[in-house]
Length: 204
Image 1 (tube, rainbow, N blue to C red):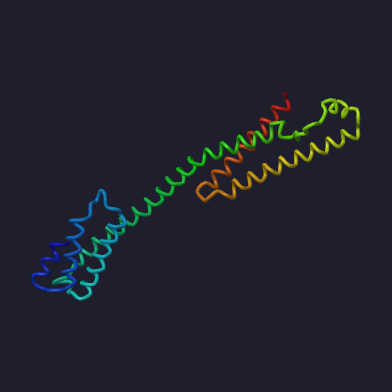
Image 2 (image 1 turned 180 degrees about the vertical axis):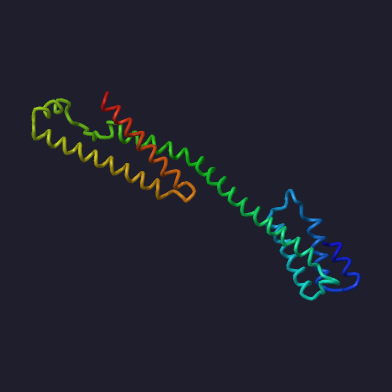
């Protein structure tokens, strides 16, 4: 393209042609196909296409046109645009997988917390400091006191269930779009695992 522009410059002087020479020299000396970002290459080629189109609007197609060079630049821009779209798709996929891997530790901590809340019996025993030990034996003989203990046990279970619900709710609401689906799948796996573990505990 630069050779074609120089040939035309020998017969026709134009600021547009001089701009084309300047742009092509700048791109050839500054841009590197291996290290220059694709977006920067596209910007440079679009500037070239703009100048070529401007020149072709004044030139004669038979005498001093750059029509063929313009078509080549257009094809190259289309090719790079497709490559850019594909690259963005791959970059987004890579970024999402990276976020899922980084989120795995939070998922494991959540699983340990939920299991402790459900299967640790100490979570359901409110502390009663200063209470005599023999009072525990008397509760077995006193039906009214047994009812109070049962109600307190139900309250503790409800408290633990509420804590688990709030924890899971925060876990989901705090997730961004990239890890939302993976967290939902994780919770499904946790639910199935806890059901199996609970059934085994009951059978034993």
